[in-house]
Every structure is written in C-alpha cells, then in structure tokens.
Image (tube, rainbow, N blue to C red; front, side):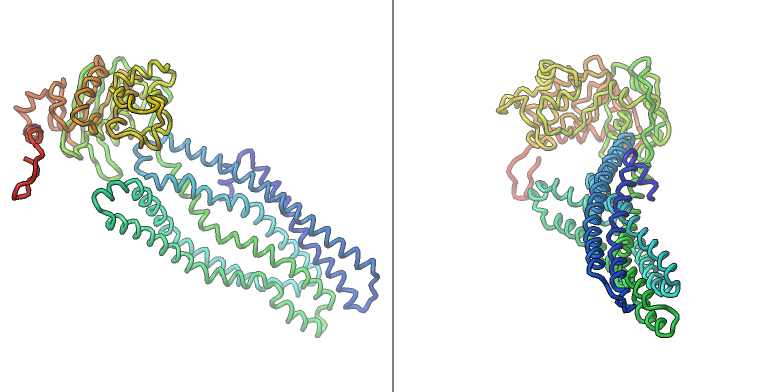
Length: 585
C-alpha cells in the first residue's frame, strides 16, 4: 500500500524521507533525557557522591535535548505536510486525467455526491497517512526497536519482561483491524449514499416545495443520514473496545518489569542499576510506541479509500485513438448496435443509415432508446457490440476531440458555467471574436432576453446558469452550436423548455443552424419533424421502422399511435373545472 502512495509522491518522495529522518532525530532527542536521568539515579543507588557540576551538566543536556526535539520534530512535520499536499495534488490530477478518459455517461452515473466524496473527502483522508503515518509512524516505531535492542545488551531477562505487554497489545490491535475491515464496506457505502441524497435534496428543493413533498423528501434525507450515523457508530462500537485495550496495555512496558524485576534483584538474578536502566528506557518507549501504533487504527480506512480510488481510476476508459477525423463524408452508419447500462440492455441490434446532409428524426415513447442512440453517436459511451461509423470511420478509431469538432450536440438541459454569457457561448469556438459571439446569440434568438439584462451578454450566468430560465439556457446552448458550426448537429429536445411564443422563433433559428448539415433530431412533438427526410421509430430499444411521415402513417401502427396522441394533445385547452373536476379538454 505504501508503495502505491509513494508512487503518487513522485519527485516529493525524498521530502517524505527527509521528514522521517528529522522526526527520527527528534524522537531520539526525546528519549535521551531518560539516560541522563539514569546517570543521576545510578550513583544514588550505589551510594556514591555526586558533584554539583555532574548534576548541572546532565540537567543542561536534558534541556538541550528538549529544544532539539522541538526543532527537529516540528521541521519534520513541516516537511511531511508539504510532501503530503504535493502528493494529494498529484493524486487529484491523476484521478482527473483518468476520469477524463472514461465515458462521460459513466461519470454522470456515479453521481455528484460520489465524485465530490472521491475528489475531496477520500483523498483528503489520505493526508493522515502521508503527513503522519509514514514519516511519523516510521520514526516512532524505529526508536522503540532500538531501545529494546539496547535493553537486551543491558539485561536480557529484564528486556524480556518489558516485551510482555507487546503481544497482548498487538493482538488487540489485530482484532480491531479485522473487525473494522468487516464493517468498512457498509460504512463507506452509507457515506456515498448520504452524499448523493444531500446533493439531490438541495438541488430538488424547488420541486419539493412547489409540490409540497417536504415530508417525503425529508424522510429520505433523514433515513440516509441516520443510516450513515448508525453505520459509523456500529463501526466505532466494534473498534473502540480493542482500541481502549491496546492503548491501555502498550504504554505499560514496565507492567511486569517493575514487580518481577525487583524480585530478580532480590534473588540476585539482576542488579539494581540494571533494573533502573531498563526502567528508564521503558519510560522512554511508551509514548513513541503508542503514537506509532495508533496510526494502525487508521490503516483500514486508508487502505479502503486507496482501493476505492484505484477502482474508480481503473474503470475501462473510452475506446479512442489519437487519430484525426478521416471520414470521406458526414454520413452516419449504425451497424448492429447493442448497448447495455451495466447488465440491462437498452438497445438491441440497431442498424441505421443517415445520409450526409439529411435530417433524421428519432421518435418513440420515453425509454425507447432515442437519447441513448444520440449519446452513443457523440461517444458518451462505447457500444456494447456493433459499431458506429462517421463517414466510414469508426468512432473508436478517432479521438474524442476530433469527433467533437464534427458534431454539435444540443441537449435538453445544458450546463452554463458561472461566467459571462458571452464566454459561455464562446465555448463553442474558443478563438471566436466578440462580434462572432454576439452574431451567434442573435441568430439563436437571445437578443430579446439579453436586452432585459443590465449587463446584457456580459451578465454572469450564475452557478449552473441559475440566472436564466430553462428556455433561455437552451437558447444560449443553441448559440454555442451556431458558433461552433459543425457539419453534424444533434438536437435532443432542443425546444423542450420553450413557451409557444418563442418556440416559433427558435425553430426559425434552428432551421438556419441545420441548413446543409447532417441533422439528428429527438422530439416528442411530432408536428415539428413531419418534414424530416426520414423518421425512425424506436420501441423498447428496437428500431421498428424507418420512413417518411406519410409512409409511417400507412405502415407503422406504433407511429400512428404516437401521431394520434400528438394530435389529441394539440387540441387540449385549459379551462375552469366543471362539476366533475375536469381541467383539460
């Protein structure tokens, strides 16, 4: 485990070694005074006279040792913390690099709470290992080992007595370690679930309040928080008795040495000065030994967290190369595509050809696989089997960056960064001038709401774009796509948040965006796609039919049902409830 962590330390590994060396010297300085105390006691035991200078210089040496202990130990802690946080930086950068290579859909499935815990809480917990357990633990365990060896040279019988407390303490520590590991999985699982629930609870606060679901939402929140509390207390409840036992026993190195050693002196097996020497050395062992072994209680947590980090990093990366786009055109071919979320297959052997410059609409009930098909095209996931080709080139045979240059993807909900709307739009083309960005915003029908903002296009979007409505965020995302001007456009419910008043304007803007491009549209409003070159009907992950609007009305019962439902909903009106309580008619 230490080897793995030191691997992330990189060039800062020597700083960890230097920290350990400084701490080792510091701990030696904390133990040496006990030898001076022995030198003061020994003449008294033997009935010898002690000169004042003899006492003064020993006391002065003890004072110097105390100062040196503070200097070396503090310097060691400073170095260890510097190396620790440098290593945490490397670990976070490495994790970020690994996550970037994973499918975007996989990252989204992890949840904000889990990723937050991974990047912040779990990595921060490793700081204890890096800043203390490695250098401080090494130094604190080395000194007692040296002292035990010295005891054997002084009197092996008394040294063996001093060792008697170690087996019992180590057995208690081993029992604590084993018990803690058995509860660790449930403990961290509860922590991840609580993090995700808290994030969801806060993000969904508006919906909870509007629909008066405070009780239900809070019960979930309360349940997960209580579960985390219970798992945590359960984990500590198992560990605490063993922790108390080894903390009580390990420092008591003189537990048997004092009574039995005195008996050995009485019967002549040992001398009184040797007993005093071993006892003085025993007093110097207790503190560093407990400090060293106390880090063992953190090892189950650290080991589990390192393993969790490595598991997250070891998830299969997105299949891609560093090759550019070399396709002959911008036609799209889905060949026998199958895809499964974990064990659940949601697309079944889908084959589809989308000619260059055509408009293809994907329709079907919710859960039919429309958005999944679009996300596979923009390479959010790798297909389980089959292939997707762009201009004859498999998506897996080019880089994601090369693919992104060819496709503009406008989803239902677009994320806006907390920077100006101008800079949010400029993400579509980082080298675009301000005039180009403003022109794209005008084409996306953003002018109307930008004119109402005090700073116009230079207004800050707020966290996640909270300063704008859903429809306004969609228009900003459409402006990005206009600015990007990619040859392929994927529109996933691009007008989902539009009111009828602005939808017509948006459709006009979209018509300009998609002119001469290969377009894939996902829409529930069938009236908006009746002029598509081809309409693909999906049902439960299967491609049922492909054809024009008229052809599908004649040959596809599923499409007729969808169209009938669309026609019916178009005639709905809102009016006051009658005696039967009807609202829609």
